[in-house]
Length: 204
Image 1 (cartoon, one colour):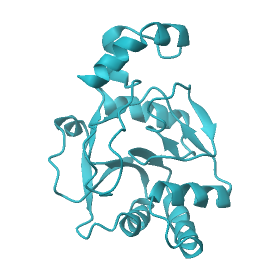
Image 2 (cartoon, rainbow, N blue to C red):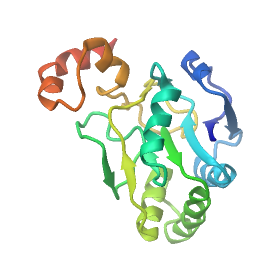
Image 3 (cartoon, one colour):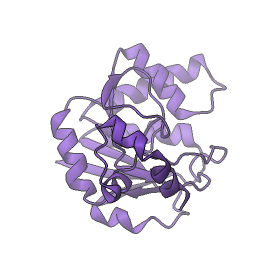
């Protein structure tokens, strides 16, 4: 059974699209994003877990879609939102970025958390927890899956979890946009023939 967790400071009203899943909130009241993220990875590690941030819109049919992907790659960490404005197809990768929506198979999140603690000792001034996680994954020799199309969309408001985070995080390749326009994401020619329409969707 897959469990869903939401990282939050409990200050944001969570979008109604999250009603598609039963979730547990992991609340950081102290605004310590790196420390809280590491501890939250330990919390979720006992089960197969999807870790979401609180500033997203989930695609229609999110639970069915994400669990279908997880069934295909059950033993991999899967990143469902990264490099939001770059077109690529689903692939295994050793360059980790963003933490909006990530699947962790049972047991692996604690291993990553403990390595992140060691990375923190080496780089004590590093501010971005996804960068620390990227280094930890490389040290551990763990590759992950970057999945497309995006099953979540960033709402593009300032992060309350990581207060200085940039807010230019919306993707052109959100599944709902593609479905509304009748675009098959794997058909790169079709995507780029309609890229202006996708960009307009992001601007709405």
